Amino acid sequence: QQQVKQSPQSLIVQKGGISIINCAYENTAFDYFPWYQQFPGKGPALLIAIRPDVSEKKEGRFTISFNKSAKQFSLHIMDSQPGDSATYFCAASMSGNQFYFGTGTSLTVIP
Amino acid sequence: DVKVTQSSRYLVKRTGEKVFLECVQDMDHENMFWYRQDPGLGLRLIYFSYDVKMKEKGDIPEGYSVSREKKERFSLILESASTNQTSMYLCATNYRARGYTFGSGTRLTVV
Image 1 (cartoon, rainbow over the protein chains, first blue to last red):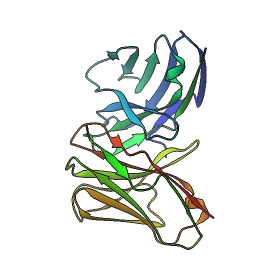
Image 2: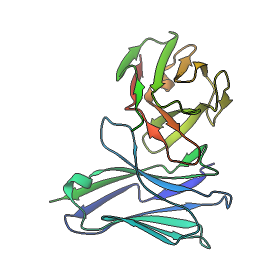
Image 3: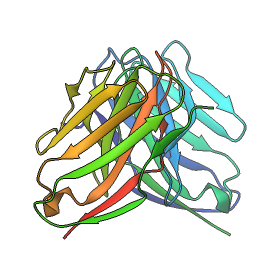
Image 4: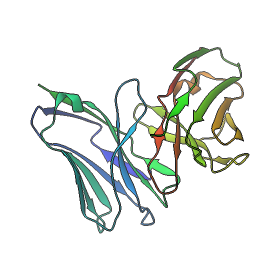
C-alpha cells in the first residue's frame, strides 16, 4: 500500500514557467514532509522540507504548500530552468526515522 | 556535510551468486537504511538499522539480509541473487528528525 501518492508521473514545462508536483498522504501521524531532487546517476538530495504546523515554506524558487485538512502537499518551482530537470520525490515520516516515498515525478524543463 | 559512500556504482552478478553491497557513512549517525529504486515504484525500504547489531525489516525484505557490525557501516546482502533483484540500490542515513542523506547508489544487474 502506497503511503504517499505522488502525481504527475512526468511533467514538461517551458523555461520560466511554474512546475507543480502534488502529493497526498493518509497517515495523520506523519510530521515531517521533505522533497528530494535526483539527477541521473546520483542519489536523491534533500531539497526542502516542511512540518505540519506551517502552511507554506519557501526557499529561493522552491515552495512547499501544505494543506493539513486535505492531507496534501505540493512542490512549486517558480521560474523553472533547464537545470531543474530531474526526478522529484516527496516523502513523509513520523518523528524523522523511517521515510515513505512517493513514486517520483520526472521533470523536464525545455528551453 | 554527511558523506555516504557506496562501494560500487555498477555491479553485474550471475543468478544464484551471493552479493554484498557496502555502505559507509562518516558522521556517526545511528540510523541507516537500504532502499531499492525502480521506475514507477519509487523508493522501497528493504531494511533499516537504528544501532549497531540492530536491524529491522522494511517493506520488501524477502531475499535480502543486512549486517551492521560497526556504526558507520551497513551492508546489504543478497543471499542468492535473482533477476528480479536487478535494480538501483540506495543507502541512506539520518540523524534524529532530519532528512536523509543518500549515497550515489549501486546499479545492480543480475544476469
